[in-house]
Amino acid sequence: MELSFSAIEEAAARLRGVLKPTPLMRSATLDRMLGAQVFLKPENLQKTGAFKIRGAYNRIATLTAEEAKRGVVAASAGNHGQALSYAATLRAVKATIVMPRTAAIAKIDATRGYGSEVQLVGADYQEARAAAEAFRAQTGALYVDAFDDPYVIAGQGTIGLEIADELTPDAVIVPVGGGGLIAGIAAALAERAPTTEIIGVEAAGSPQLGASIAAKAPAAIARPVDTIADGLATGRVGALPFAIIQQRVGRVVAVDDFEIGEAVLTMLERLKLVAEGAGAAALAGAIKLKSELRGRVVVIVISGGNIDINLLDRIIGYGLAKAGRLTRITIDLRDRPGELHKLLTLIALSGANIRTIEHDRMNLDLRIGSARVTLELETRGPEHIREIRARLVDAEYVISA
Image (cartoon, rainbow, N blue to C red):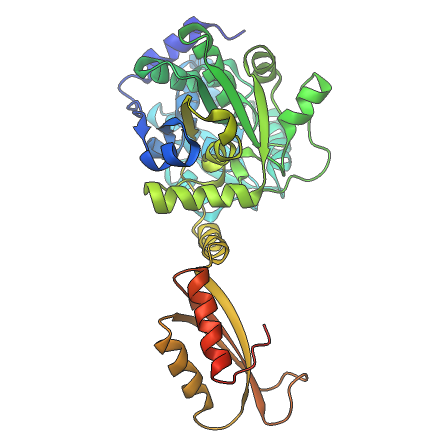
C-alpha cells in the first residue's frame, strides 16, 4: 500500500472522537528570538504525551478480525509503545511492547500502565526491534512499525491537515527519527499547502536521514546512536517515509544534545511547556536556522513531552550553569572552628543561595591543617558571579577553581 492523501483523510475520520486536535499556539518570545511569526503545534499535550497516538490508533483501527485475534507487537523507545498500548486497549487487542533496557523508567511504567506486556531487551532501539521481530516470528503477532507503515504515516499526517485548517505557513519544522512524522505531514501539506517548505531536524547523535539523503536510499547508522533525544534515536529511516521525504522535504538540519537541551529549557522556562528531547528538537533546529526564517510564518512541531525527570534535572542544571545562574567555587580554608561559618556568612551576604557543599579534609593535595570547600551556588547571572568572586578575593580567600 502506498500513502495517498485520501488515506490521511480516512485516518482523520477514524481519529475523530478518539483524540482532540492540538491547536496552534502563538509565542511572542519565539517571535522575538527568531524574528519570525512563530506558531507551535504542541503534540506534547496529546493523549499519551506525544503525536504517536495518531498513527498507532489508525493502525489498530484498520486491523482485520484475524489480525486483531493474533495481537500486535512493536519495538519502541517509549512513545510509540505507549500509544500502541493505549490504542490496543481501546480496541481490546493484545499488545506486546519491546523496549530497550535503557528506556526511561517513566516511559516503561506508562506503557505498562496502558495495559500492554512490556519486555526489556537490548541496549538501543535496533536491538529491541530485532527482539520484537523474533517475537513476531514465534507467535504470529502482527508487527506494527513505529514509522515504516502506511497506516501509521497516514495517522501522523493528520497533523498536517490540522495545520492547514488554521493557516498556510511558509515553513513547517519537524523532528525526524524514523521519518514517519515528517513524511505524513509532508504528504498532507503537499495537497493542502503545496507552497509550504518542510524542514526536518534530526539529532546529530543519530543522523540517519542525513546519511540516507547522502546515499540516496534509506540508510542505517553503523555506529551506536548517542543522543538525549531518544525518540529520534532509531538508527535508520523507513523505506516508505524516505520515498515521501525525497519528494517533499526541502532540507534537513542536525542539532546536537547541547542545542536540544537549551531548547528544552527555553520551552520550560519561557513557554511553560514540558518537551522531551525529540519534542524540542524542531525548536532547536529553528533557532539554528533563525537567520533563514526571519520574516516568515513558521510552524514548529513539538512532537512529545514524555521526558525522563532525571534527564530534565540534568538539562536544567546545564542550562543554569551556561546562563551563569549556577556556578561552582572551590576554596582552601584553615581547618579550625569558625572558618566555614565565616565563608558561608560572606556568601549569604553576597545574595547567592548555596545549593551544595563539599568539605574535604583528606585530599592529599592539601596542606595538613587545611580543608577544601567546594560550593555550588545559585546566582542571578554572570555579573553576580563576578561580584561574589570579588568579595571573596577582597576577604583574602584564594579561589582555586
